[in-house]
Length: 363
Ligand SMILES: O=C(O)[C@H]1NCC[C@@H]1O
Image (cartoon, rainbow, N blue to C red; front, side):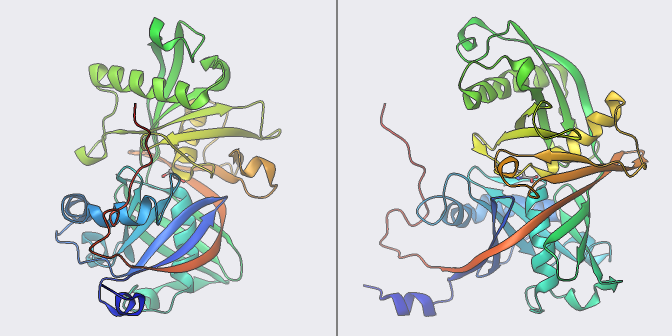
């Protein structure tokens, strides 16, 4: 039988730093994760899925995690760190798998990576440039390079994401009779946009949601997925691995103040984002530009709130359209992250729940 001390002295202890961004957690894996084979970050992402998924489950699911847990696995070497286009790589993970972009985790990582002095964890830390008290870093995420600005002595981080674009405006989704328990309309208009990951965007007014918004969002996800496959809507210009519907964001412009709106993001098979969803902000800004009410390069900021940030002033994200490129619109997102702690995770071989579990009730 293992004692706790001997478990802690083993090599397979996983150390994490814990943060939150507007209430959404980021569990940053800082040591104990095995090396990922592959030349590119997307190859390493596939390798993590195929060979180390038990570690994701262990860290995200109960009893170590919970239904809203989110993680970031640092990847020291990628094709873009080698070419000098990025300073470090990252893989994002959650209860269901691995995402391609995450704004809230980027905000947390920005702070943490600038704070750290551990060169084993972040070998290029010393090459970062600080100008007028703001440190700049480039994080290679599966969707591309994110340029992050971290001011000294502040918890507010800004990032410029990989280009965002609208895939389909005004997609008409017929609501079949069996889904009308949660959605009161016969037809709903949905927009599909990409902000490092693909989102279905639908207003709560359009949805005519009866009482269970999570059930309505899950129905929209199913129906949009069906239509998107038929009409080839979820297409990334270069990477097949990025072609999936990551989430549904239910928006409400009647809440969030005069220059803002509320959004509730359901992603990864039912996880609910506590934050205003940074990658969702990227997608929503691209849509706002296409709808013609937000300019590009005008320094106009729009506020994006979540159900948590709405209750606490100053916790929301802000988004602005910075630049139009051939691949899409470069969006700037601003938000705040705070530390909550650090953990050392162990597991005992005899533990039948060592790789985590999802709570479900027998039918
Ligand atoms: O901020 C974001 O982009 C995200 N938060 C959880 C789901 C998304 O990845």
